[in-house]
Structures are given as C-alpha cells and as structure tokens.
Length: 462
Ligand SMILES: Nc1ncnc2c1ncn2[C@@H]1O[C@H](COP(=O)(O)OP(=O)(O)OP(=O)(O)O)[C@@H](O)[C@H]1O
Ligand SMILES: [Mg+2]
Image 1 (cartoon, rainbow, N blue to C red):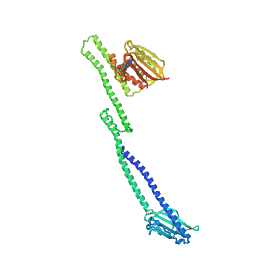
Image 2: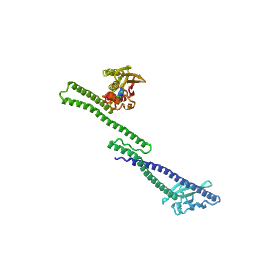
Image 3: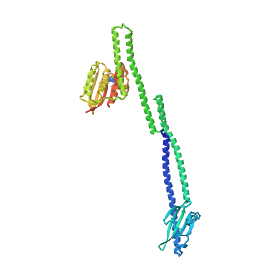
Image 4: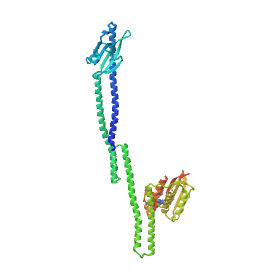
C-alpha cells in the first residue's frame, strides 16, 4: 500500500488534535451552560411554588375551604408557565396558565402527575415540560397539591441553536486549522525536501562539492542540514582522497614499470651489450622489481585497512618482538649506530605480524633518513600501564609545516626525496592504521636538520 505523504499526515494529525481539544472544551462549556439554565428554571419554579403555597395557606387560614382557593401570579403572562392546584385525588381545583398551555392534554388530566419534587416530561407534540409538584398540608394532613409546569420549548430551541452555532464554528476552526497546518507542513517539509533533492542531485552527478543552502533557524532541521553538509564534507574529502590515491598509486607503479620495460627493450634489441652494462641493467630491473613489489604489498595493506579488515589478535611479548626486529634490521643498516634499551617481558594485546610491520616501518625510516655516522635510539618502557616505544634518530628531521601531512598516503618531504629518492610515502599511513587498530597512540616530534622521535603507546597486559 502506498504510504500517506507526511504533509497530509501532519495536517490530519493537526486537525484531529485541534478538533478534539475544541470539541472537549466546547462540550464542557455547552453542558455547563445548559445545566446552569435548568438550575435557574428549577429555582424559579421553587420560588413561585413557595409564593403560591403562601397564598393558599393565607386563604386556608382565613377559613376558605381548599376546594375554593385561588391563585394569582403575574409571571404567567411572560413565561410559558402553568400553576395547578389539585385535590388529593388529582381533581383540578384551580388552574392559572400562560396561553401556551391552553387546551393541552396535560392541563386536563385529572390526576397528580407524580408527587415528586421535579421531573421532566415530554408533551404529545414533543415539547419538553419541567414539572414541580409540592403537597399542601392542613392540620398536619395532605389536602392537595400545587403542580407547576414550565415549558422548556424556548430554552431547548435556544440551546439547540447555540449547539449548531458552536458546531459550525468548530467546523470552520478545524477547516482553518487544516489550511494553516497544510501550509505550515509545506514550509517545514520544504527544507527536508531541499536536502532530499540535493542528495538526489549528488547521487546522479557525483558532484560532492554541492551543499544544502541553509537560511532557516538553527532548529532540528537546521541541525539536520548542518549534519548533512558535514557528511558531504567528509564524503568530498574521502572521494578526493580516493581519487588522489588512485592517481598517485598508478603514477608510482608506472615509474618502475617504465624503467623495467626500457631496460628489457634494450636487452632484447641490442645483442652485443658489454657485460658490465648488462649487469647494471639487470640490477636496475631487480631493484625496480623489488621497489614495485614493496609498493604493491604496501598498497595491499592499505586496501585491507580500507576494507576494515581485522587483525588476528593475541597476547604478544612486545619486548622480544622489538629485539627480534632490531636484530633483523642490523643487517639492513648502513653506517648508522643503533642503540636499544628494552624493558623485559612487556605483553600487549595485538597482532604480532602487524606490530612487526609497524616497527619495521618506523625503524626503516629512522635508519633511512639518518646520515652515515648518525644514531638511532630505540627504547621500550612502561609508564602508567602503557608500553611506550620510542624511536629517536639524529637524522634529517622534518620541517614544522610538513608535520601535519606526514601520515598522509604518498606524502614525502622534499628533503626526504633528495636524501632517499626511493620510497613511496606509504609506510607511515600504514603505521598509523596499525596503531589505531590496536587502540594505541602515535606521536611525532621532529626538528628539521636535528632528528625525529616517534613515540608509540599501547596498553600493557599485566
Ligand atoms: N625518521 C624520519 N626522519 C625524517 N623524515 C621522516 C622520518 N620518517 C618519515 N619521514 C618523512 O615522512 C615521509 C613519509 O614516510 P613513509 O615511511 O610513509 O614513506 P617513505 O619512507 O618516504 O617511503 P616508504 O613507503 O618506502 O617507507 C617520508 O618521506 C619522510 O619525508
Ligand atoms: Mg618509510
């Protein structure tokens, strides 16, 4: 089933709530109004009855027999009221009534309607009549009744009119609320609609530079727009990064491939190349292949990072892992002096392959970017339940302005390019990912020309 549009739903809810509130208020007001009118009539009937009673009692005390008593009341000309004095058996003794009651059946009934105080009856033609009956006593005995009738015709008609007026106004009110709700919903939803349209336009054009223009107040929708724009910022950044990564990666792969292909072409075409030159070309091909396979394996690591691949975590002895890596690196190092101070038996929760890769990246950099004769200091110690690895060198260092970009993929400082032309600029991006996956921290301090220090912290397992 096709769902109802939000705009219509909001409008209907608006009408429903408004209508219910108005209906409840109006009903209460109407009922109170009606009750107060009826109460007023009863009070009036009681007053007149008391007056008639007094008049009859006066006549009785003057010796007039009950059968001959008379009633004179002025109100009869203005209100549709009737006063009857009846005997104990209900025989009419005296009747005094407004013309409305003339010839009505109720006036000719020779009986007491009911000797109860108040009741409402309906006449043969549908007119409601309020009846009040009071007994008349003489010498402690009931001698007859005073029966008062009051036609509710005028009041009922006016209440009915009032009811219709109220219903009419409520209807108009709900109609106006519906129109107001419809336009209000349109105004509110137009901002949501704008977000939706922008999202659609971005999806079809892949133009992540678009933003939703926000001019309204900083309410929930304002916040939604802001969040949506922030999401677009991140998407744009990710998209640009992705594009740059792809072009950097192809560029980095093309250089060694071109060199390998060039050398192979020469070897293939020229048959009598001197042995020494041939050897040099083959060495070139070998080193370019090594460079390329390192690049491919780094790219693979980053692709795994992008795919959110999880490591095989276990308890690892960080102390012995660092010692092993340093020993392996010894064979790689040039004329650089490597010193180590490793605290024994520090355990962390992690992947030994990944931590080894991290250590190789940092040590390789420290050795690579240090001039012959320089030093590299490696230390491992615990402080506040943190295993802290410090890798410090006296190498070329990094300019202050370049520090923010160091962990970006493919980023290499000009001095590093000059010092070591080989290198892809992927090592630290991988290192950062490994540290993040281990919930650790990686901090770099460096001064150009003086050296750098990388500090990595992991939680220790006790
Ligand atoms: N110890 C260091 N001393 C000075 N500069 C450094 C050091 N470590 C990293 N850098 C700078 O950070 C850049 C990025 O390092 P990263 O390890 O990511 O790449 P790389 O060493 O250039 O290449 P590779 O991916 O082959 O390791 C380096 O090019 C260099 O400019
Ligand atoms: Mg490196």
